Image (cartoon, rainbow, N blue to C red; front, side, top):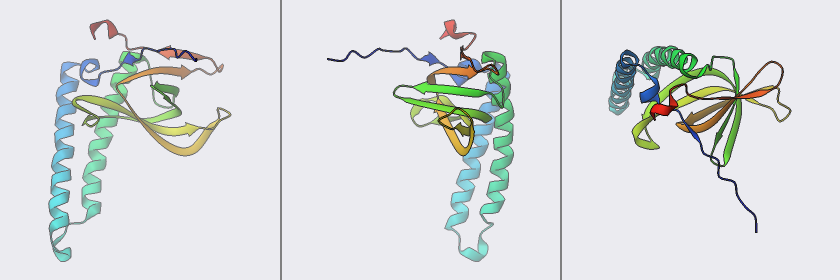
Length: 165
């Protein structure tokens, strides 16, 4: 019989890690994305000659995603010390991801209907620990995070105010 060790995951709730003004801005950005998505769906239903085109909506989405990245990066730096270009290990349940973080984001909805989640996007590490070229996106709310330092050691990242959770 094998014994499994149960590892408790750290909580990284976006709606608690953000300050009041940041949370209001995040809600506005998420609503903007919803409106762009709705308009894009309506555009797709139009006859081809009347469509405004995917590129138009992609341009609007990119502007919102840029603002979301800046906001999320600021929150992560302040609350957990995680910055762009950091190399991290994300452990969630049975899955583990190693990546260099290139952008930050957040979203609401699935898989947690009533809660938000973070998304870290970047380049996956190869098996030997070097930076690869494969893109990777990891969503998290509950996870264990470790950052690799220049000397090769890994240090756990914790949310500074996790006692509030």
